[in-house]
Image (cartoon, rainbow, N blue to C red; front, top):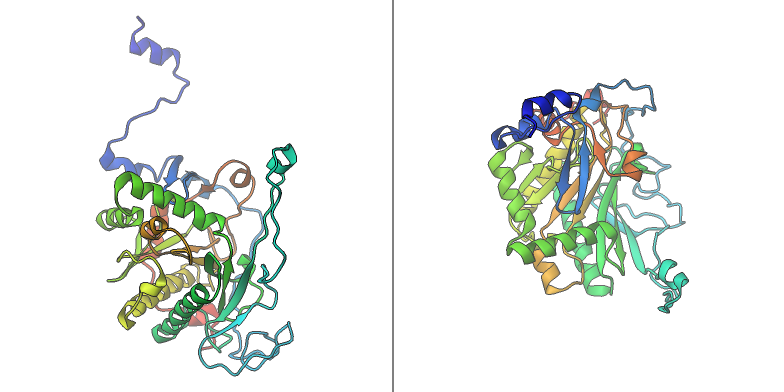
Length: 384
């Protein structure tokens, strides 16, 4: 038998694995490349903290610093203006909801489904029709506001509007799902800076919430508990990735985050949909946490910080098991990486192999934790 000394000398060019004590594990991950598992999505993310040191000569974004007017006569979302589809907006003074003039799905169309025969074409060339309805929700009549600029009562009006839309679509349509989401900023493909979000109701459950729901159901079957309740308890104990917190909600850079400054907002009470926010106080707590996150984002690089935000909650229609396994959470997915001009690109390895991020979620959380919830308005170019 060869001695371990001889073996080590003979193979000294190899990098030997070292077992890291559990107490040092999280700190060690700041310095080594590693993978993290996302139990919600059921996939792995490659983390490469050392890559932030590489030089950057690639594309740079234009920082969002331009001051906008309170009302833009050319904006198709401002009160009283004519929309691109021909309809004219009312002179609204709060939120305003309308059916998207260019909806991604149709409410009325012929049914379609590929045949169920055994030939190879039927197996490999599948398609099914999708019916649905798309909505636009204007947050405010003011053209120059974002969620970060809005007061808590103003954000509460937005939450009330989300609740009403969820309730109305559930009661009045046969659709299975409604996805409420916001794209903020040019870097996220937003075609109009007027503060707004969208809601797409569809006859199917889309891929992302469907994957999460499948994993949450399987977790509850295996462990007899809610996945996000268990995860919430771990994050509250460790206190390593918390960005903002109040009595109703926890905002964290999740363990498995893909985007550089991604945050996950989880309700502390195990509610299944936003309809279960019944009191004004509960809605105010959600408004507070959304204000805190969006303001911290703007302050990070002193710019109107772009992101995609989406609410994941119980589908409009589903089984009792699907409803029981659900837990309301909100994803904030911002692309900026190093500055207001350098963003994370999802290309190459991310598209062809697996998701990859540079800074660790803990590093991102530490940067966001120390930021104020008061906007640097002059630096941001805000005229208010």
